[in-house]
Length: 255
Image 1 (cartoon, rainbow, N blue to C red):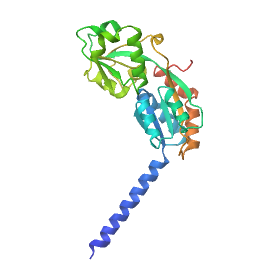
Image 2 (tube, rainbow, N blue to C red; image 1 turned 180 degrees about the vertical axis):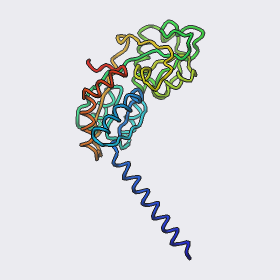
Image 3 (tube, rainbow, N blue to C red; image 1 turned 90 degrees about the horizontal axis):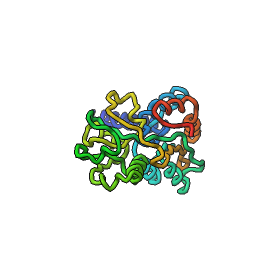
Image 4 (cartoon, one colour; image 1 turned 135 degrees about the vertical axis):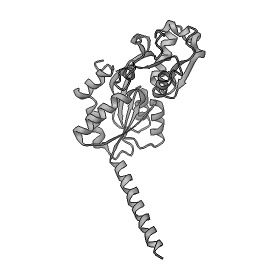
């Protein structure tokens, strides 16, 4: 007979913990972040939370995949995209009533962790390079930019069979870091991150060889219960403090 009250007590505790957990999650400002921004965003999030005492929850993926999740009802409050077409899609679909804005421009690099490989376009056709990592050209803006570089340099047809595609720039980086691919296209912000103690060999690619990688921010208005906090973050991303962080990670903020 004593087992039932004890079980009921445990059940009540479980409900309370579950409720507190849900409440805690609801209190956070949820931000969908393009993978190239992963390292820079951690510094930005820390600065924002210290200034406003607002906790952030972030999810990293390709801009296209994050946008698809939002359109399917994922409860994000803000999108940080690596391509303005995705925030604009949210405008067109009625998910935001505030015009998205470019906060920085990303830069594309060729990156390898193999000491003897020189990261340049002419080396991609060499026999020592069998796999070239590139982000998904359909959903990842840095993948789109890499494809443009290959096409504009008339290299694509020569090396297309060597390409291995990551779901996002984050997965592409893993191919490069683990040497599953001998070389790959990545973001300058990732290469410059203090988290990467071994920088390998890298080369910044000519910005005129691909369309600008406009990093955009949009507030999700549909179902947003954190509109005031979201607006604070929106304005914070354009502050001198954040613009300096972005510069340190190789982004251009003066265009």
